[in-house]
Amino acid sequence: MASRLVLCIGDLHIPDRAPDIPAKFRKLLSPGKIGQILCLGNLTDKETYDFLRSVAPELQIVKGDFDTDATNLPLSKVVTHGNLRIGFTHGHTIVPQGDSDSLLIEARRLDCDVLVWGGTHRFEAYELEGRFFINPGSATGAISGGWVSTDEPIVPSFCLMDVQGSVLVLYVYQLRTDEKGVESVGVEKVTFRKNGEAPS
Image 1 (spheres, rainbow, N blue to C red):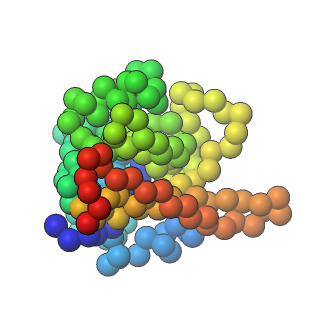
Image 2: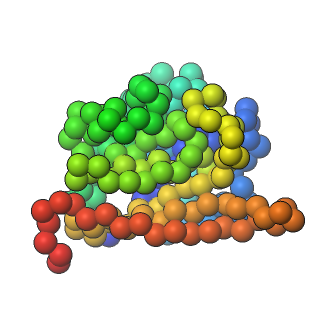
């Protein structure tokens, strides 16, 4: 499969915990640039679902703990891009929440090279035992349900993945607000190469 951008997004909680996806993010998520969306659940309103359907031709969704009306959604899925198997789950079934050993067990269960999970509302990305783990955070900056410390404010974020063969380039978008209340979008880049694969 040719390289294409994959959006990882979740924990939206609209309108219960956040009014909408931030305008600066909506502007970035324009149709025609993204090939697939991996939605990690807690997509709790139809308008946001319709918006995501307009952004990419393929929307893959797993069930979050607040997707009570979506009884037919699976708890996890696996997709393949290039030479990488990418598993994704909301994360509420991972106990303890966000625990690296528990996430490693889930990655092994799904037999995936990359595991994308949510639930903590905070961005994370790291390698462990030859696998790559990504939590895109909450695109709306929705408050967490108590699983994580609330000492620091939740920064709205989402991720785009560009997969070419055995290499995944992750772009992390975070909406920062300075002391004057001015919002700006910061972008970071993280690269993962599947173990044992020679560069092409």
